[in-house]
Image (tube, rainbow, N blue to C red; front, side, top):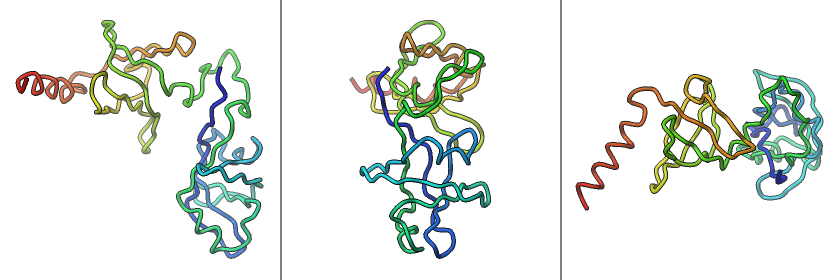
Length: 183
C-alpha cells in the first residue's frame, strides 16, 4: 500500500496567549492526534505536537515553533497530516480500512455500472459522506456512507458498491439527459 498522508486535524485558532492551538481532531480519540508523531502542514512545515487538553470538543496542542497567540492564530485553517504508516494497524474485527484508504476507489452501482471515483470522505456533522466524481463529468455527488447505501467496500480490489436511495442521483441523470438533448 502506498504511503500517503492522512489528514488528522485542522487548526481552528489560538487558545490563550502562550501559543496553544485549538485543533478539530479527526482521530477516533481526539487526544491521540499528538501521539502519531510529527504533524505536517499542507505546505510542508513539520510540527512536534504535545497534547495539552480539550476545549469545547477541540484538542489543545502546543506545536514546536509556535510561541505566542499571533503565531497560533496565523495557523487558523491549517490542515495537519501524518504519514499513513504512522497510524496503527487495524484489527480483524475493525472495519479494515481508514477513510483515507477510500480516496481513489472506483464507485460502482449495485447493478454493476461504474458511477465514478471516490475523491473525498467528509463529515459535516450528520454522518460520513462519500464525495464521488461522476464518470465523464466534472460534477461530484455526496453519498451517505452507511451500510445500507454502501453495502460493499473492497479496498484490496479498489472499489465500493453504492445502492443510492431513490432520487439521490436524479440530478446527475437529469444533467446527463440535458447534455444528450443539447448534442
